[in-house]
Length: 115
Image (cartoon, rainbow, N blue to C red; front, side, top):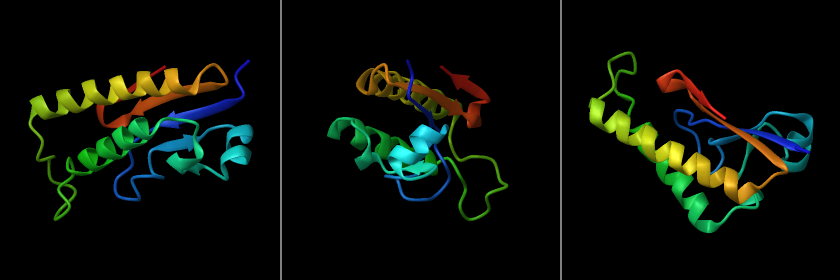
């Protein structure tokens, strides 16, 4: 039975270690101290934490910070590469967390949700 419901979602700005995983049910919020979850509080490997932080920083480079309404500076190829690598990280995250966790990846930049 799933105890904790989490959402992987890359948010603009914010700290890379706490703007990636979000608690979606009361059990997750209680266990991890709120809606945004610090990666150090999750039972995942150091390499998984590092990968999620790397993806967060990469994601932030998709925004024109000088004038955010402008189109992304990313090429179509870079967008596709980011999506591919982030989905791979999502799949590994689910494996590491195990059956007590239900994790979805909300790739809102791509208008897709992965379960």
